Length: 388
Image (cartoon, rainbow, N blue to C red):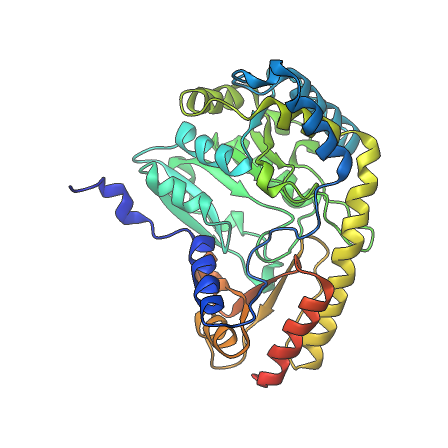
């Protein structure tokens, strides 16, 4: 059987490939330290787990969930945005519950773009933005992120003919994979350009709560008038250590939320209500302490890893947000060659920057989601290779 031609535009999912390589190394008896995937090793806070257990014991949660997300969860998201960002949201019209933000990112792409349309995608970036645009039949226009521009896209350099065909612009700050942050001036400029060109602005806000040295990321919806042009994706995965729970929300422009809902409700049946009730508990103010405790752990690991890598000769910068280090590769080695060499010689899994886009060449990404001693061990093994 010949499968759909659209599959020819995509390859295996990046992290599936990394998992396979790590599993093969373990099968050879290698003590693998996986710093390739941003999956928090810290457990979900107990109060959130307790709320899910309590919810699961209620037979009312055993039936189909609300397709748009439980109203209590959508209200909790709206209250969180008001408290955290000063942004008012209508939980019925401007908030949609998601089975993790990855699902929503995919469905919004299909709702917004199709053949003949352009999706503006920063690169390097989370692979789902470009992959889903291609699967939807749209054309991807890449916006290179470089160190010289602070890993911010140069929106002024997008040609007018591209803007005229564009339906969707993706931004992601704090940024995966670079760890870069964006100020309100950049966000306001993105809002203005999308309004001028009738383009939907999509902000992936997965790392907003993971900031260091007093940094707190803004929401694009803080920009006056942003709700007229922007949708933002908020995920509970990273701040609340709930990656396996699959829970998030899309918020913002009402007609875009409605369009996303049309695709979503015709594709899935929503997240288990007990997990949404756990999300309600997560978004209560007292859980801010649990987030800050985890941020303290990541900041300690950041400082440990940066210090060790610098001592080994790497030009490692300390990010202000996320739990990633974006580290230049040694002279003469590509990103993939560096990652392959490190895995082969040390058993440490790193992500090649080129897997996130052409502009990621010359970097590897290191995740801080492993215990301190394993990060220290990994950096020691890398240093012993004397790559620089």
